[in-house]
Image (cartoon, rainbow, N blue to C red; front, top):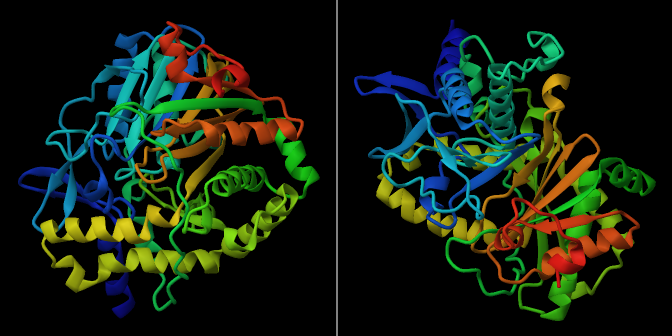
Length: 463
């Protein structure tokens, strides 16, 4: 009986959906709780997934596809509300709209503004983009939503998927049925480990030295490579693709530090990891943490080959269930602390901003997130030219990168608030020096020239 009561309490704790006289609402998960406190018009907390189709988007059909997707995944169709002690999500009764796209993604969308949804769907020309607040979900949840939206869109157009969509292979397309409680649970709390030591504190990190772009401008520079070519180079070195690209990122930061040394001697790259690979969970909410790969520049510059090896071994040391559990224990523990839970929200907001400034992005020079390979049913895949994955903007790190693969197309998107393009130039130059074919274009430049996603070579884009 005692064990039964414990399981009941745990079940109530991790499942975040509630209902009262005001309607349906959801508690924020552990990772999402800090985002409302540190988000604004520029650092919006929005990241973006997009798909470029082989034909112009039918916006009327897209609206219906979006309505179907939001009804199947209602925990996405929410807006932020303030309580006395915590923020919470209130479910929207109406269907979400489709907005026209703009040259600068992930901007001008303040989740703290009354009535603002936690995601935004945009379309222009052949492009469909969905921008999600990290208060709501992570990359796994976001790409599942976009894939489901695309599947509904193509089905409404009468496109034959070419496979049985009810087969287990395509169970990640949430096209029918009702959402299970596990889809919107706080999996951090399900797997919360008690009594573990806190992870070692990192020193303040070096940050890109640059003036900022005009307010509301978020530049996206995209590099396209062959997935197989990059995998071949990584395997030749005995590392993963993520480890190779992280080492390239570190190398670019190292060169920037050497050109303008600062008292912050640590260059540190955050690599987000999908906790579902270590702790099984079907949640569409946040369930990710990170590994920080860092170098101490007081020791001097390291050759690129050495950076690759060191990145590989740092990942091996940090990316395992026991090491990750330390971060999980620290991050999820505060939500269980009664003293913290009883602090009024206005005080929590102030404390969250101070803690984020001290222990959040101040420890990072940037981040690179690799979602991996995206798949779609063959009939739908034939209608999709490419996917994109744009990171959330940051005032502190200024420039960050996200990676996504679509067939043999590897797309690396740098999102930046910085006027300088030097980080991107160094990154893609190193890839070319490895003998890899790289095609690079800048979204803002294409817009200025009257194009709709035109592609230019590196020499033109990155002077």
